[in-house]
Image (cartoon, rainbow, N blue to C red; front, side, top):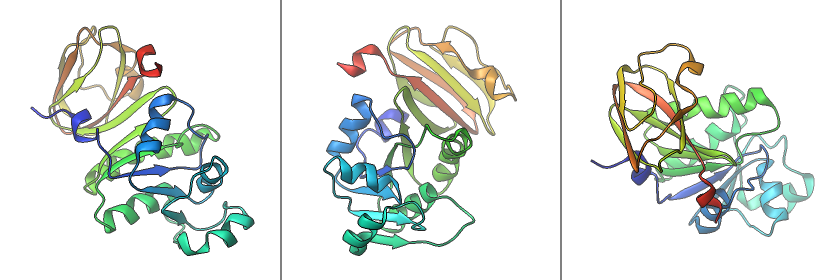
Length: 216
C-alpha cells in the first residue's frame, strides 16, 4: 500500500506562507530542493531577504513590501478575492498550472486564528485534488482519506483530527482510536514501531511530530 508520506514525499512545488519563517531543517530542505516556489504575498519578503527569488508571488498584494512589489512586479499574480486567504489562492494557482504535489511551509505562528485556518484548509486542498503536506517547525500535517499507512519511528508522537471519518482504528499506536468528535480527543498518541496504519472511511488530518533525528 502506498503511504500518505510517499504520496507527498517529492513535491512539485513549495508554498511559502506568511506566518513565521520556517526554521526546522526539514522545512528548509524542502524549500531548498523545491523545483518551483510560490510565495503568499508577504511571505515573499522573508524568502527574498534570505536570498531566494520565487517563481511566483500570489495574493491580494496587501502585505508585500513596496520595494519587492516594484522589484518583482513581473512575478506577482494579484487575486483580489477576499472570500479566501492567500494560502488557498497559492494552492489554486498551482493546481491551475498542473502542480498537484504541494508542500506548505511558514503557515503557522503569528496569529493563532490564521494558524488554525491554514491547517484546517488542508482537508479542502485534498478535496480539490492536491497531494499536500504542511511542514512546521514541530512536525508534519497530512490530510488523509480512508485507510492510510505512515512511516514513523517507535516513540514518535502522533495526533489525529477527525473531519468526516467513521470506523477509526489503528495498528501501531499506543492508544486506540475511536470515532471521536472533539479534536483534542485524538491528540498526544505515540507510535509503537516503524509504521502505523489508520483504518477509516472518510477524512481526517494527522500530525507527526518531528523526531530529534530529523534535525540531524
